[in-house]
Structure formats: structure tokens, C-alpha cells
Length: 313
Image (cartoon, rainbow, N blue to C red; front, side, top):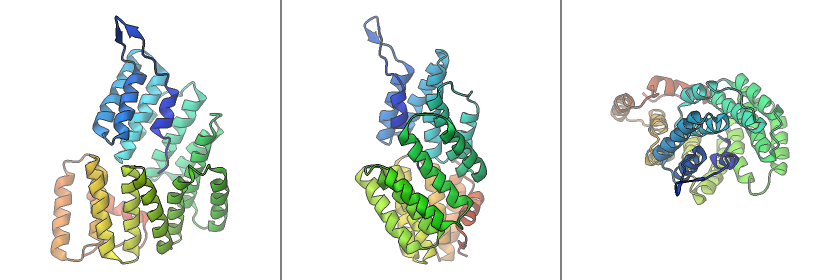
């Protein structure tokens, strides 16, 4: 899902390094920058520690702007880990920021979280509120419009011609450097139309784009969506290979919850009863040690969002 990039947001922080007794004082923005460096390297555990320390420092120094930024960075990690309820609670605890820019970012992030929790109407309201705030950043506005198109796919899939027209308008307004990010959105549109062969072509472009830029998290997400297309086309061997690839990348990044959710797709793929029974037992057992994983809920969510998906017996 497109979201306010941590790198963009951290430019808001004034990176101050005042000298104290010949040493640099460790400020909240300084800690956040270290967190960002770790985040870019895929070291999510270190990023979490630095962002959490930045939050503690901001609270200690009574800097509400730094506090909001730290919470937004932690929220990014929560959402990357697919812990959306935790992310929602973090943001609900914040007061309304004085800065219009921070207010827009907070509303935007809350809308993304609501959408992932299945609250489509609330997500649209929050996003429209974010767009109404005068943030003064065209880049943010275009990215928000991408999310708005994504939400519309979920809320009303009947107006495909109007959606495609609005997509093409947005594509023209988006700079050439940013257009590859729209490929994922077009792939979702093709999946909504159940044109899975076309969707596969767009997912391949998105995967290649993210691979070239070492965006492993985005690549894992795209591969998982590609696997769903192959399941719909009943090309189960290809689907299983992609599921293993996607879950492996999540594990490499230390994101255990998304990895388990991806592995659960094998219950829609494997045909051997013995292998299915073993996989279910393994997922139940391993899932007990991963906070937020409930196999029954995960399978239900897949079936709700992807009509026609049926468990193998």
C-alpha cells in the first residue's frame, strides 16, 4: 500500500546537533535519523529501538511535533509488520497536531490503517479530511489520490470506466520518476475485474521495479498478490513457488506475522491431505508464538477479499 514515506517525513525534522561539553547532544531527530538508516537497510528491530527512543526523548522534552513524527515512524513499522490494531491505537492516542502538514500526514496514515482493518468508509472520510488540510505538498496530494483510487476499488467496483479515467488523469499528473508506483494500483484494478492474466503482467513490472531498487518489503507484498492471481488461474505450482518466495523475504526482514499470513495461502494450494494437515498443525503451533496471528481469521480474511478462494481438503 502506498504510504507517506519515512524518508519524506523525516525531512520535516530539523536535524540539530548542538555541542554540549564537546559532545553532540542526542536529540529526537538524531535518533530518528538513525532509525531511518536502519529502516532503509531492512533492520526493522534496530529501527524500532531508535524510533522508540526518539519518542521517549520527544515526550521528555515536551516537543509535540517530534512526538507526532516518532509515532508516525513507529506506525510505519507496525503496518509493515501488519499489526494494524496496534498502529491504530498509537495514532488515536495523539492530540491534533498544530502543524497542518503533520495533521494531514496523521489523517492520511489513520486512513490507511482503517482501510487495512476493513473500515473502508472511515478510511475514505479520513483521507478526504487529509486532502482538505492545506499541507502545501503536491507530492503528498498525488500519493493521497492514489490511495483514494485504491479505496474506491474496495467500496465500489462497478464504476470501472470512471475509475480507469481517473487513474489515467492521475498518471499524467504524476512525474515520470513516480509513475512506477502506480503499477501496483493498476494490477489491483485488473484483479478486481478478474482479469488475472493482465494483473500478472503488472505485478511482474512492480516486482522488477522494487527488486532493482532493493525494496524488499514492497517486493514481498507484490509477490504475494501475484501468487493469488496464479491460485485464481489454478496454476498451483507457480502459486506455491511464489508463496514460498514471499514468505522467505518477510522472514529475512524479521517480519514474522506477514510471513505466517503468506504461508497460510498454501492451504488454498497444496493438494496432498497429509501435507495440508501438517501445514495447518505447523501454522497453529508457530502462530502461538507470534502476537496477532490467528489462522482462522487470516483464512477468513483471504476468502472475504478474494471471492472464489476455497480451502483444499
